[in-house]
Image (cartoon, rainbow, N blue to C red; front, side, top):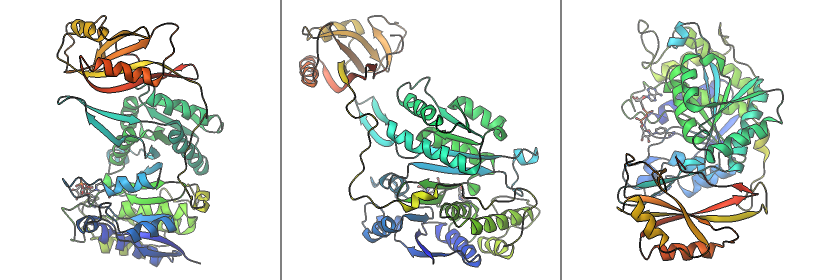
Length: 486
Ligand code: NAI
């Protein structure tokens, strides 16, 4: 029985490397059937605003697995990246990238005899990738960075499950919770909460800047690192550099219903159509897909043939021993096919599944799933931050901002770019034309949402209001940060 998956060849070098990979799958008798779907640049150009046909969407949603080549997002047409949209719309919440030393791929670490074998699991939906951005004034833009407990739990749980399956002994959470106390704080708290269910795996956390330093100085000490989206994006490209560059970086986007397997690199327009691209990253993504689907024997055979081929010094033009002539894409794939059944000297691939295969069996939802951790948790409105456009000095702004108070509120703080400027501040703090007024409730008062909007409405009579944010407590805990210097 062959399983059917959706395949999109992609743009640029996509069709060349996908043909090479599918050729290797065929030679290895992989029990898959392919439904080729219409996605990518030409479908944007043909007027499909999402970059795919309705049939492609339906096919992928029915089959649950998409194996895709890189795709180009047309520039300057206001369309969103098809790659990011696909990951978000289908809720592929975990982006897994495996990085390992490949013999025959020359790096500073391979020359020093240091073996790298680490996995980055990146949250794939939230964070700044929501793309929720606004101009508050002509000079000041704001981006909303949404991090949820439920979203964090999905990716972190996945990272622990994967680590357990792979037999990893330790996992680190990369974050910046020392600065972003609430957003990254949720991610970090969730990490340690979930860690309690995996006592056999040593769980630790590391601030992302320190992580970067340690990854380039001691990469062999890491096994699995889980991170929020943007930090994970940067750190995973850093890791690609450690093992030889983008040509060797596979990626799996895992969701409960749909999973997408693709290379990290793009369409390489500079070399497209010349049959010289390196298919390794897409092949490794395909190998990860086979493992995910339980085709672990095929995965191991193909991976071993790839490793053996690299050990033989066979290479495409973008890497390898320059004294050995480069193979083109087709010759490189043919060399791997000829080596099916061979075993590399170092780093033999295992036939173990390192993904959570059970997710394949999940039934299609009939409506959107809405997640919440603690329904009905007590909430209390404590006040509001009102963001305003002004060129007034802090003292004058405070006087104006206080002119619209009623008995419910007091003005407690003004800040500019997060630095407190009133009631105390420094004359050396340079200001933009956008400030934040923090109003908090007076003792004994109870606030409603209407009180906040009424206050904002009164303030707007004298100051140009650009945005409002509620200050709340959840379950008695403060749900907002203090200003620098407050
Ligand atoms: P790129 O990854 O396509 O190319 C960067 C450099 O790496 C180029 O010099 C290219 O020749 C080389 N390169 C990339 N893959 C290679 C391979 N397999 N073999 C040999 N050399 C390789 O990144 P770039 O130029 O920033 O983006 C080009 C296009 O790709 C853009 O339209 C971008 O939106 C899209 N893109 C798509 C992605 C996806 O589908 N997941 C990911 C990244 C970019």
